[in-house]
Image 1 (cartoon, one colour):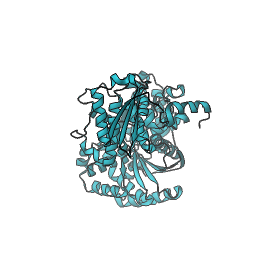
Image 2 (cartoon, rainbow, N blue to C red):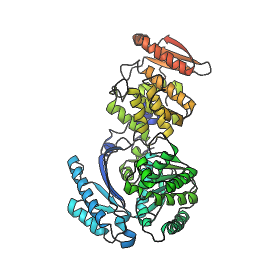
Image 3 (cartoon, one colour):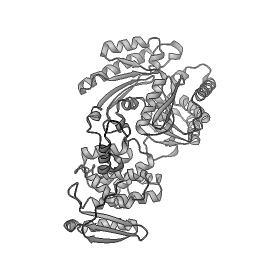
Image 4 (cartoon, helix red, strand yellow):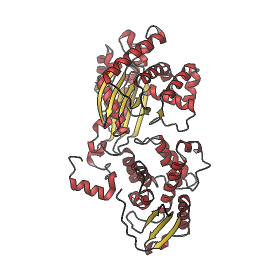
Length: 527
């Protein structure tokens, strides 16, 4: 329970919204997170991101990256790459000018391994300050690890495991447990540094194996989930998708096994790098580092032996946003909070999602909480794509749900949510350009998504105002009976089309329909 919210206020929120809480995106302590601009000066790239973080899942209002390779050659010279230094200064100058035009200046800028290790790192920071007025915060390795781990927590609240963030000139490990960051360690296992190591692949592997062993001794046993953060890891994941023919090209929450990683490392070693780069749409600068990074990943997984492996698109920049979030926002479900924000912004009748949720919940009364949160999100999002052309609205719903930049949503949950919203607008799912994705969830889950979508499709026809209480559904699964109780005043709304949609829902449930016109009890399911 949060200290700054009175107990009676929390009880009122629970009564009105159930365990999902009251929307926070209009709270003054949260709205100040709108338009947060950060610059990450890394060893390989310099990136500016402007977040709208008020909805708990960050929206990327602006996102631009320049591959500068600041850390190239640093192991040999001790200095920043001269051309990379020029490009980085040009990039930061441009970013600060953009920030001023957006009214969000000054930006928050951090620099990592290359700038902190180079002898001319302080001179570079002085140049940035002189040219842009922007103070660069040079963070040490453990702090870099902590911020990256916080980025993972932004996408996976309450997650646990080991976060591994690889940059151009360093690699960090951080432990997360119970939604908090624990031990953090750093190393020089960045592919830009390893690239120039004498002795070639054999020497690199021996050095990486030794360093990984030292890191693991410091961290202790870590056999839970391994979260991979960083551009080189994401590139390897993209190649893994290509090798497997995986249909959903969303890197965040993409899962790999140790065997899959080993197979992909071998695939990379045996492939024509230029052809592979083109097939996977990876930049040449990034691709040059992938073979080296893949060697490190194979050694890391061999030593750590994680339960499973998940790719995180959220890292240090998102961790900087998480740093500024009040605890009551951190504690929220990023999926549900983002769905509320989307409903308030885009739905024809903001607030109706709660009414629809309570109407269809009897169908999912015994469902686990993980399913109920998807029902909640679907109810909130059921109408946000109404501006799309009717012929394509169902596919737009699926595409938006599966590819949206949302935290707290696994790939299987993306497909479930997308299918439910597709069935909100059409009875059949076959014959779309997404058919190859449906097999990412079981037939039973596909049927549940269909039932949810058809329930929303029917329920959306019965209310013309968000707080109307004109009817309720009762579901008796053992008897296979679906009972609809409507207030007599709702009879004009129960038209031929509405009746057909109810029949379609009953068909998916393999149920008999009973319709009664009587005053419903309206005892809302508190969940």
